[in-house]
Amino acid sequence: MLNPHHVLLCVTLLQDGGVDGSRIGTAIEDGGTARTPSIAQGIQWPDDLQPLATLDGPAVLAAHAALQRVLSRYPKEYAKSCIYSAKGMDVIVGEERGLYFVRINPRPDKCGWTPGTVLGFDVFELYAVSPEGKVLARYPYMP
Image 1 (cartoon, rainbow, N blue to C red):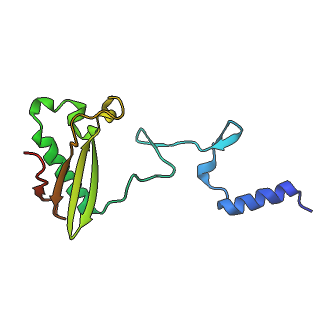
Image 2: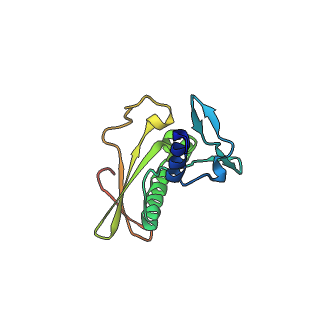
């Protein structure tokens, strides 16, 4: 007769898909088991990628085109400043009637500023972009 602990182990292995090679070398931390991180080419790769968003190819082209347009509007001497770089921006992409609408918001908090810091009143950039990545127009709210 099987020990109840053996039955529990078998049921757990069956639910978990059995034993695989990636579990060899697990470490015990805080009373539980932890996977050994997968490291290749000097990068620690995630076990389960949690996407920020899923975009189709044309949406990515639209976002890139609009972001490049915004960055090109800044004076060249601002290029080294985090706030005037892609790192200091949020990009929001929507699709309507076959066009992509890309809104770019400045995010100074991503560059070390205090959260909630506002650099201007209702400052954002809004562009209409074709699925091929061509900027068609900028929303005319500012000169």
